[in-house]
Amino acid sequence: MEQQLVRPAARRKPFDPAYDPVHAPNPGDGKDYAPTYWIATAGAEPEDDGPVTQDIDVDVAIVGSGYTGLSCAIHLAREHGIKATVLEANGVAWGCSTRNGGQAQISAGRLKRSQWIERWGVDVARKLHAEIAEGFDLFRALIREPGIDCDPQDGGHLYIAHRDKMLPALEKETRLLNEVFGYKARMVGRDEVHGDFVRDAEARGAMYEPDGIGIHAAKLAFGYLGLARRLGAKVHTASPVLASELKGGVHHLRTPGGTVRARAVCIATAGYTSPGLHALTRHRLMPILSNSVVTRPLTGDEQAALNFKARIPLTDTRTLRHYYRMLPDGRVQIGSRSAITGRDAVNPKHLALLLEGLSRKFPILRGIEIDYSWWGWVDVSHDMMPRIFQPDPGQRLFYAMGYGGNGVMYSAQAGRRMAQMVAGKGAGLDLPIFTSPLPSHGLLTPFRRLGQAGMYRWYYLKDEIL
Image 1: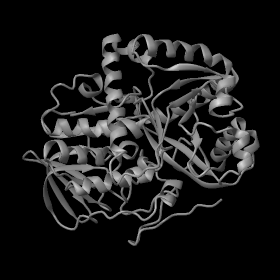
Image 2: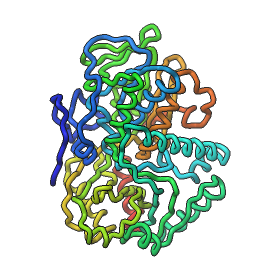
Image 3: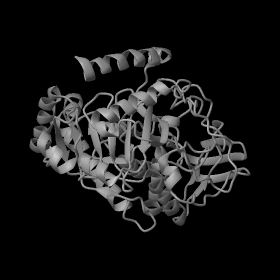
Image 4: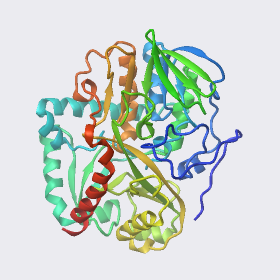
């Protein structure tokens, strides 16, 4: 199995495939990237500002240099005249932002519009839909910026029913999107899926959403980096926050090279949020592993057989869903959920399950060579929705995370919203994702993974057997 990697000139510590954010004190200190297709094909890694080498005073420190943290830095500079300092434990966008499937959909979190209505009522759900739609417009504008060349594949998103029993729910959700939200989703029959989109053997029909863009994950992150630095932000790599203390209203963030004294702190560490980073973020997320593979380039005959006419984001209706698409260079990428612990991530059975999923959809790809294989942690909140929030009014500390695997697009808007809050201009942000903290499991926290193991078994039964 080929696993290429373009390495920067600076020497890095070895990548740790068993890293687990539930237990690790921090994500590392200058570790190498995961061996992803994105890192291997992004070209030369762009310049950053190197590690912190002395004590410094800053207006705003952003912890985490993924999409959210870099978007926050961009919008602090553009909209509020604030030049932030970004602290990254390893390389730029080392975590979620270079390990995802590169799918931008018109969603944030794991809940459907119908579930928004059940939880908050129609009026709030409509406002939340408007917020997500505004976020998609922002994302689309950002990826058109000079210097952000992320190989966009625009054209919508197809939510594919993998069994007949899933069609009634898809039809109901499609009606809801049109009638309540004015969003022009539509149902697509099996023959139309096969004729106009892709010959997925499992497909029984699908819901088509007009908004969906596939992107190159690392090129997007590196493009954000370049834009943030051109706007005056500093991005310090190999600078994990080892301890945080509030003294006289100033946050003291200790890194291996010096202490960063910040008047405001933004946390954008998502699935790589260590328990010791800060008391206000401890165990507020459930890190979930996701596996991803990329095949060798398909031959012309293989591409014709699969009929990949629409090179757009595809997901299926499993609870433990598959996300997949044809990449611009003719490879197929597919991902799904993986091991429960970091220690078990290397177990070959997880790769085998993912490849079996690929084969069910595309039987002619059974046994195809896999050029890239990796996994990464997804930041799932306990109520399946993200938060952009100031958890303690007495501290100028904010966080934005909890996307549940749908952060490629909404992270841009989340970073912008967090920048508004830092600048004191968040008064009109009254949606539940802005006004409540990430929930905690409380006393159940030590048993979360036991529950996860049980739920995975139930999801498998529900998705594949019952």
